[in-house]
Length: 313
Image (cartoon, rainbow, N blue to C red; front, side, top):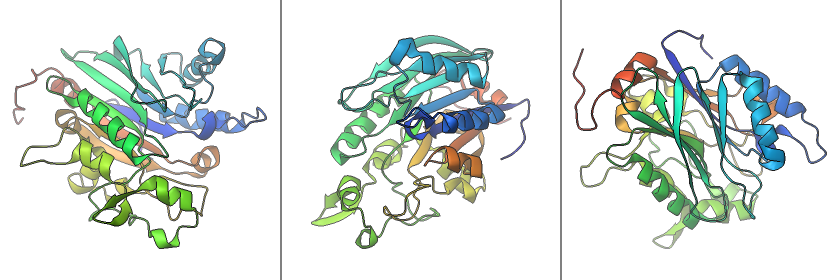
C-alpha cells in the first residue's frame, strides 16, 4: 500500500465474508476489517456481503460508517429472500454530495446499490455502484452485467465495483491463468463458474466481455481499471488474484473482484492495488481492491460536457 496524498481520491471495493460476523455473533473479523478500512481512508467504499445489515433499522451500516469516519454516509440495497447479504456504498460527505439513490433488481439475488453524487467543484454528477453477481448462475450473471451497462450509457460517468464470480476475458496479461477444471475438486463450483460454448465447458468470462468488450470497432462501455493500470500505467501487480484467500478445493486464486469505470473517468486513474495483507486475509476470503484517482483529473473529467473531448495539457 502506498501513502496518502492531497490529490488522491480513493475508491475501495471489498467483499467481507458475512460482514465479518460469525453465526454465533463473534464480530472480531468485522472489527479487523474496520481497522483496515479506517487506515485506508476511502472516499468511496463499495461493499459486498453486508450480511443482515438491513436489520434493526440498518444499525450495522450506520455503525460501519461511524467506525470508518463520521464523514461517511451509508447507502444499502435491499436483502432478498434468496440472500441476506446486500450490497452497499459509503461516500465521503466532505467531497461528495448525494443527489439520488437507485436500486437495480434483476433477480432475487443481490440488487445493485447505486447512489449518484456531486463531486465538489465538478459540474456533472458521478454514478457509483456496488454489485455482487450471482454465485450460482452464469445466465443470471449475464443479465446483471447487462443491467450494469445501463449505468454507462451516454451522458453518464460511473464507477462500479464488486464480486464478479466470473473471470476476465482478456487472459494475455493476467497473473492467474483460468482454472484447470479437471483439477477442481468442488464440482458444483465447476457447474456454477463455467459456460458451454461449441460443446465444451469453459470458464465464464461473459460478464467481463459484456462490460469491457469492444464490438465492431466501437470502444467498450466500461474500462477494467486493473487492466488499464497494468497495461497503460505500468502496474502489472494490479492484476493480482483476489479470491479465494481461504479455500483450496476451488483451485488457485482468481481475479474475480474487479472495479470498472466509464472511459473518461478511467483516464483519471493513477494507481490500482490489490491489498491482501495478513489483516485482510484474516478478515475475509476476498482481497481488497483500491483504485486511486487524481482528484483534479477526476474533477476536470466531470466538468466537461458528455461530448466534449479532453484537451491535452
